[in-house]
Image (tube, rainbow, N blue to C red):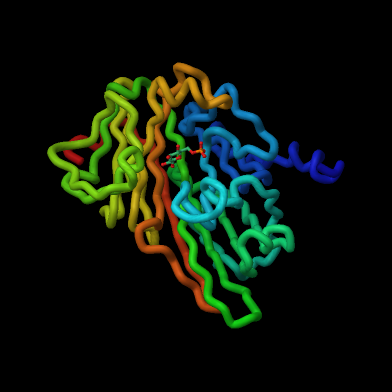
Length: 296
Ligand code: BG6
């Protein structure tokens, strides 16, 4: 692209407090790092990730909007994850949250170019904030700014890649007995049987109407990630496993062992906004030593 665009590749924000902190790229409005107070990275980013268009960054937290995956006519996961966002200087958009230690506000607006593929005017405001305990909080506010009186409809996901020590030692709790759509079986609907979810092969499922709290237990690391979500009824769980890993150019062959995507999402029931209406979707991530959350 233009030289202005090129200089944007390097427009990264680091917000660090002692060792903890996060990193956000304007490209994609994309969180690429989240560290605990020991300076340990909690998100997975592929060693083969490319940090420039046209492909979204492989890892971190891509934003899927206005379409999740191939559930519609747009490009896979929509276009927000490979557009350049701007810093939002419109303060009142987010009431000051005194409990957050550091935050950044980004905005993506409909462009003329994008209106050719998705003919709607919108403002998408994203706040990324670090809580006092090191939690990472993402809040999205999407507003319909159409002047033609038309509503629009979208699906959404925070496509979070968690870093795990060994996928075969990991379990996900909070999705037991739920209905899901299986992306590997023509999006057919099934019901999850049995206990916590464990991993021994490729998995790509959309759990429907889940509890607001989901936990990823990393036995080897003795760490539990807790995902809390609001306005996002569904949760996608994805690991590509070996074959699909090999087929992805921006993903190492063995990296599937060290990542897991659990994605707070709104997919089964798309969100519709009338002109002037705003939707809010929030996810809060914490990483806690497992000994502190036994019995969860
Ligand atoms: C997941 C989808 O959310 O994202 C998978 O459920 C998809 O089907 C995966 O393969 C990765 O998508 P992409 O476009 O980033 O390669």
